[in-house]
Image 1 (cartoon, rainbow, N blue to C red):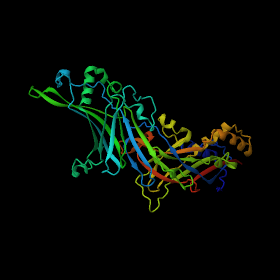
Image 2 (image 1 turned 45 degrees about the horizontal axis):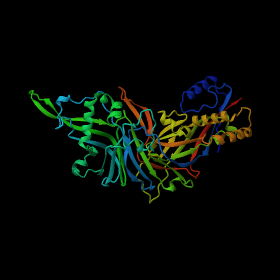
Image 3 (image 1 turned 30 degrees about the vertical axis):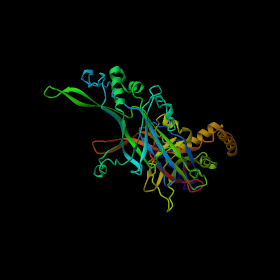
Image 4 (image 1 turned 90 degrees about the vertical axis):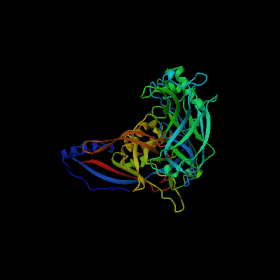
Amino acid sequence: MKVWTSLIKRIPFSFLIVVACCFSCDDDTAFIGTDIMPGNDDVSTSHSEFVVKTRSIKIDSVLANTNDCYLGSIIDPETRAMTTSGFLAQFHLMENYSYPAWDKMLKDDDGQVFADSCDIRIAFEQYYGDSLKPMKLYVEELDTARVMEENVSYYTNIDPNDYVCKNGGLRTSLVYTVKDLTRPDSETDETRYYRSVVVRLPASYGSYIMRKFYENPDYFRNSYQFIHHVCPGFYFHTEGSVGSMINAKVSTLNVYFRYHTLNEAGKDTIVDGLHRVASTEEVIQNTRVENKLPDGMLDESKAYTYVKSPTGIFTEVELPVSDIVAGSHYNDTINSAKIVFRAYQLGDNELSLLSPPADMLMVRKKERDSFFENNKLPDSKESYLTSYSSSMSSYVYSNIGQMITIMKLERDKGAGVLPSDSEAERSAKYAVWEQNNPDWNKVILIPVKAEYMTKTDSYGYVTKTLLQVRHSMGLNSIRLEGGNSASLKMSVIYSRFSKK
C-alpha cells in the first residue's frame, strides 16, 4: 500500500535549512539521504505498511548479573510451564571489620571464643503462588577453592556443583511457607511486616567465623579476603516441591555472640553482639533458572508468540527490510518506522497468573548477549526500550527507522552493492550475502528491568535518567499478536526529494 501526498513546490532555501536542522537533531529520525537539500528541490512523502514475521524461540539462559534473586518453583496456569529458581550468593563485608578485643570476648572451656547462635535470613516482600504451600529449601556452603569471580560472566544455567563445597561443607534443609504460620495473622497480615525465611545454622559455624578473625584479621579486611578465606557464600535451592516462589530482597548471614564491656557506672557487664554480612550489589549473586516448557509454546502455526521470563521464551522478529527499501524506495528517506506489538487476548476459559513484562528491549539478534555483558544502554539505533501500555495492551516502538537504515547499509556494504547496480543485480548479490548472514534483519524482544535515577529540581520538575538495563528475573508472561498470522504490521513513512 502506497499513498503519495501533494507535491511541495518552490520551497524557499532558507526554510529547508531550518527543517533539515530540526530533523538532524532528532534522535529518532533515520538518516537515508542528505540533511540539507537545494532550494529548487521538491519534497513528497508516502506511507506504506509491511507484514512482520515473528516466532517464539526457546532461551536456554541469560546473563545473571543482578541482585534480583528468586527462590521456589511454580507452574503458570495459562501455559503449564514450570519455572524453578534458586541462587548462589556471596556476602559483602564492611572494610576493615573488627570483632571486640580478644580479652573482652566470652570463652568456652577450651579458652576459645564462641558464637551463641548463627543463622541466614532471606528477606522478601513479593511472592508468587500459594502462601500456604510447604516448600523444601536446601542450603549448601560454597567452596573457598572455587570462588565465583568478578571478571566472569555467569549465566542462569550455571552449574552449582562447580562451586559447592564437596568435602565437609555445611549443608542443611528446612520446610517453609511464604506465610509464617508461627506468628499471628494480625502481625503477618500487616503491610509493614517484612517476611523472611530463617535458616538456622549450627552455632559452631558462627564460632568458626569468629575464630578465623582472631587467627588472621587480614581475612576481614574486605569482601574479597572474606570470600576467598572465610565464607565463599551459599547455594539456596528448592527440590521436590512446587507452588510458590519468593523474590529475595536481601539475604544476611548473622553471627550472635557476647562480650564484656563497661556500663555507665563503669562496672563490667556482658552484652550481646551481632556480626551481620549481606548479599548486596558489591558481591556476586547468581540466579539459576530451569524452565520446563510445553512443546505447544513453540508451535509456529499459532497466531501469536510468547515472551516469558525469567529466560524461557523470547520473541524473534524478522524485520521486512528488503520490502521496505525495495524498488523505487531504495533511495528514499525513511522518516518513521513504527511497530506495535499488541497483547493476544486470552480465551474465556484461560487463566493468567503472571503479569506482562513491565519493560521490553528490542535488540538486534547478534547483539543479544553482548548488549548485557557490556552493560550497554538502548541507543535508538540498534536497540530500543519501551514499556507496557496497559491502556493499549501493547508495546509501542514509535520509530525504529535508524535500525532499518543501519541494516540496509550493512547489507549493501557486505554484499558489495554499487550505486549503479540495477534492482536485479542488487537482489543477486543480496541472496549470496544473506546465506552467510541469516540473522542480519532479525531482532529479539527481551523482557528487562530498567533502572532509573530520578531527580527533582527546585521548580518541582522531575527528570528520569536511565542507569542500567538488565534481564528481568521475575515471573512474567505475555502472548503477542503475530506468529503465522498477517496481523502484525510495520508502518513506514518515506520522503523523497526530486530535482525540478
